[in-house]
Image 1 (cartoon, rainbow, N blue to C red):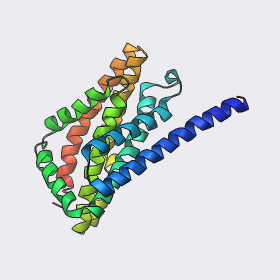
Image 2 (tube, helix red, strand yellow):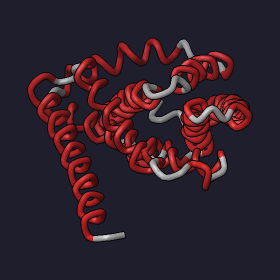
Image 3 (cartoon, rainbow, N blue to C red):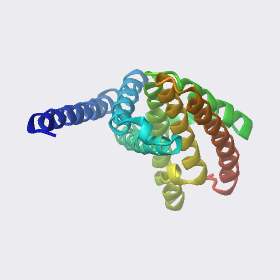
Image 4 (cartoon, one colour):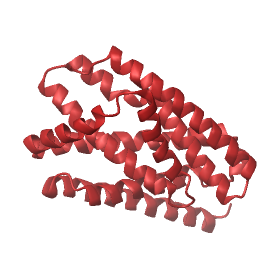
Length: 233
């Protein structure tokens, strides 16, 4: 690789990193001035995942198995969730009472998802949308970023109640058995999207089959874990 090529690669990475910083700064300003703005948050989270996802899977995908691709994609999914958590916590600093109201309203909807079948179908809808070529990562970014944001508000409530043990447990949800499997299943869905673009139908079907199976297992593990850890309830 000559110097000119190296410079062009460095410039490409530098520009992408600058764009990532701009997106994060936009999100911070939005939280500070507007609180929880669903539209702006969604656009930023979608773009964040789209860009970080491309940084990790831009190499020749023939070098990797579906599992390897799914794991590579799992990394930006986890990072995005923690970005959402951070800005959810930041939101509670500037708009504490408002954020608790948002949490209460969303909590009413979450209670409806109290059995594994409903959790599975809810998460499956995300996965199906993630399969759509080109825009799948953007849609998944919207879903995970906003989920992390709400989780950040819930974590602040645990701090207010002085449930520090529950705070630590909940903050590690992406690494819990069900959290890991759920995010990994989304990685498989996004891998399936890549195979659609490459017209590799066999690997696309394998990826989607594994994604659905893993997501189904994750739903049952989630219900079991919610029975074990009440998270301050």
